Image (cartoon, rainbow, N blue to C red):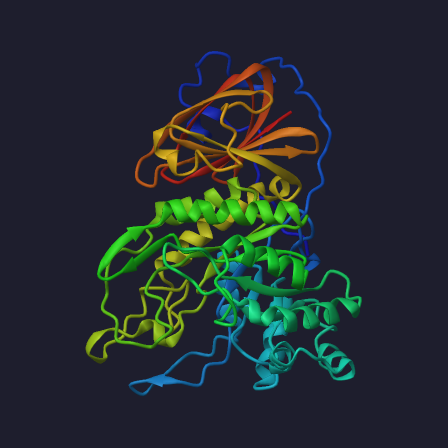
Length: 480
């Protein structure tokens, strides 16, 4: 079922977009002014993956990791809710998530729960990646029984929600050979529109052993390249959590975040595939199940939106959130206490955390611009202003500050530059995570534009576009 786009054309540009000073030179509502058409250049190939059940090629996959699954634990005598229920699928749908990439439940361990989840995902037009321990066996043994594999996959193909199979999260190179066997075997089945899923390690400012201790250290670039070359997936997904806390203090690793984006963007371009990225929903990842005290800083709304906006500007063709449901151990605090509000769109006991509402806001915006971004090729980014120095020296940066008709950007901004069916599209981000900003784009002629901000679209004409953007906010401009 195709979703309804939340676009309203022809509203007042002054009211809707905070187009600062509608009386500004050369800007008018499109019906009130003539404009010259922009140049049409050669269309570039677009590499994107989507699913019919979420709306087809115009709809961006919005994934979430961790659940829903049927919980069997309890804390202090209080049982966890059953996340595989209409109530929680309705909440997931209302948030705007349309793809469940890691349900945290193996079919062979709880087939009735996974079957129910597939049925509920189908009801709410979501995709669902299935997990099965046999997939791990294939990866570990590097061999497969195709008859057994076909039999397992046949259990799911009747569900429209079946998106493919989840292979492994954050694999080291030692798993690549087995992943290649599983990946190639899945695609040999000829299941059109279905895919394998794996999520790669990021690069941080501490050392990560990408080989699993089986060989000498390799660079992150070598790690990603080997994964794409040896496993041959159809898209590349990775996580990098930019707002991290260590040793009782908050340290932003924004520089490393953009370096990671740069590497993945380039590798995806080289291998002609889309990339998907994770957004951080909270903090205190507690995989070791230790009693960890509450330490600020958590990503606030502006930082969360900035996280989404910068990924869109870089050309991501899928946005994902971690975690969807807070893992039980992630709620462990000091002295035997529990904290179910410090990570997850949804807390362990089913409470809606602040990041649920941040993600809902971001997803509503994505819904209004994804028909363009899913069909456009990112050709680089412009980092304008002093605050964007984190980005300015990376290979994809357009150092002239010009992109076809666009001649100048004023203000601290990150501008994603796209070829959209041969025309210019720009995704403009307020680079500041703390302050509202006025950002102005100046063009070399009097053009017409579709400007989308906060789920609404207006058409204007002129030689410059002044925008007022909240901290971290993004807006889409498409030249006519």
